[in-house]
Image (cartoon, rainbow over all chains, first blue to last red; front, side, top):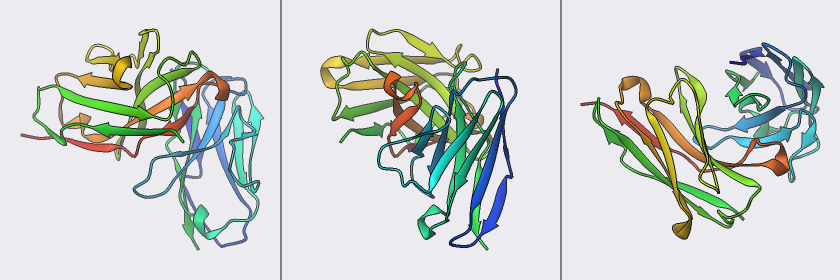
Length: 106
Length: 121
């Protein structure tokens, strides 16, 4: 089974900061990766699929990059509503999620 | 706008069967581009895909759960269901239903809010 490792597990940031989250796959998965945002008590929300395609309605401050085994989610200017937990998901072979990265207030 | 809503018992006894239903509105079960899945989330194991059913009735299961899982659908009622048998405390989790579609590379694009299931005697 393909495993996804996210780093860091948590980070502290301020409004306006540029934030980067990494996701590494245990083997190459082309660009078959998505990113989700989850706020407490809510379902995960799709942000990006196919590694870099922004889901409709998602603000352009979110962007994704990478292919093969290494992927990145970037928030260009962190907003108050962005403090949440972020997950990656691979769909190359079955479906597996990363363990999550919690973005907290500094 | 598509909506998915999970329903079912919040408490299940060990060794019994967990049964949940997802009701879908705003989309058609007969869409050939849509698949319907179950995902669970627990503090210990994070997010875990359980299984998926296609409109044709074809099913796909997580190998780690395959021996205990069954997913079915009722197209006339726009519902699909999850059965997980021989449950233990390790199956305590928030259970979500979700859609995935070929249009977004088979990722889960719409999710239900989730229903908390506790396994306890």
